[in-house]
Length: 183
Image (cartoon, rainbow, N blue to C red; front, top):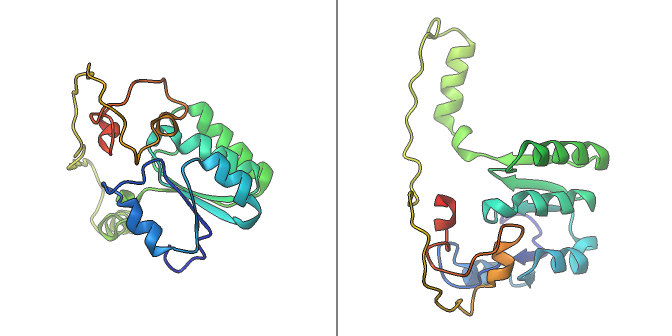
């Protein structure tokens, strides 16, 4: 995205962590910076042509829905939605508002995957009778126990914005950063 005209950036955690938000902010010094995507849309909506959503999974659909209804093109990380309803809603809204949308799934678009598909489609390896697939996922912790302690929320993190539409739970580093995917 470095070649694009980045007019605004939004993140709920401005600390140095997995995404190193301060470095991203420094890379785009002219971009307005926000904690809350709703405020960003309110203030910058007329300046935004398209969005890229790479937030925690549970907020992908709601942010994308709001952008589409504003007539913004949307490039959203996987998983795009958490329910069939959300998926159908996004499809209908994209058609209604005539915007381009794409769900990013880099694992399925790698050169090796594309090459294997071409071989199969072209009949180059004969009839496929069995496929065995392996993955290094999940690479985040699994089978976690719900924490009972409630340490203070770091100053760089807006916990309420991180929770978004999910059921509220007190902050614990067991949920953030990036570990949320295991939950």
